[in-house]
Structure formats: structure tokens, C-alpha cells
Amino acid sequence: MRLETQEVAAIKAAARHVFGADATVRLFGSRVDDARRGGDIDLHIETAQPVDIWQLKDDFLERLFERIDEQRVDVIVTTRGTAPRPIEAIAYRDGIVL
Image (spheres, rainbow, N blue to C red):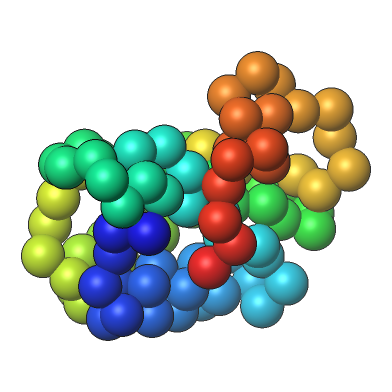
């Protein structure tokens, strides 16, 4: 996994603050492969209850960038128990829970 310890801590803290303590955060995409270089940070956040994704996504990124350098971060949000879309299925299959 190609994230620094402080990046993982910042991601988890921002997700807990914005989406709730029961939110699950997964890193997926190129950053899970130590052999690859570069790439954006792809995050899958799973919540217990439906949320206003657009507002909370912006809040999450704002809080995250207070703690780490601003960089490209893609976020998808899923409500636990719903049928996964194709990109979410990839996150479930290949992602690493932070």
C-alpha cells in the first residue's frame, strides 16, 4: 500500500468525522500495488445510513486537505447493504480496509 502513515490516519479521521464512526474506508486502485508508481488516491467509503454524498464528499476532502498535502483524491460512497455498482465491486474485491 502506497500511503504514508499520516495519510492513512488523516483519511480515517476525516471519514469518521464526516461520515460517522461506523464508516468503513477502503483504498483501491493503483495505490494498493507497491510495485506501481504515481496515481491518485482512490477511496471507497461505506456508510451505515444513506447520506448526502455531494455535500459530505466536499466536507470530507476539505477536512482531509487540512491534514495532508492537497492531491488528487477520488471518493465513492456506498450505503452498506445496497447492491454494488461495478466500481464499488472492484473496491470490495481489491480494496484494503484502512
